[in-house]
Image (cartoon, rainbow, N blue to C red; front, top):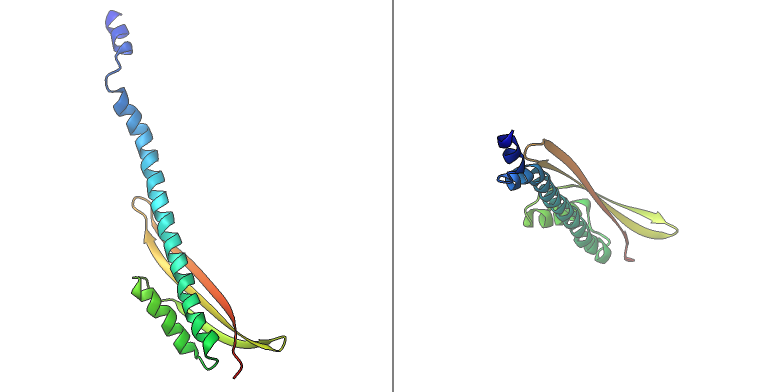
Length: 132
């Protein structure tokens, strides 16, 4: 009986047990924040690539689909990302020619101890075309 009371009052090792319980949750939160940062980085760079390509279309009304796609993908590869599928079209809206750029990027992230995740990012821009 005396030994049992002594064992119940013994606090040695309680910090290790608490860390074992809380440490896993803390590690998962840190990992989630890191992957959220990666996803936001991909999204922002795709938007910046489309914005850079939209400047080409805003200045030159003869810009082609190939030139826009090349501009977007050159930017993405310069920051170490995969290439995106890019579409560019020009339509007349209320008597004004408007160019539309759409880009779609599919990234694959492998989350340790979880699985592989396929993420699709999209960005678009509408650009009024200069008069020729």
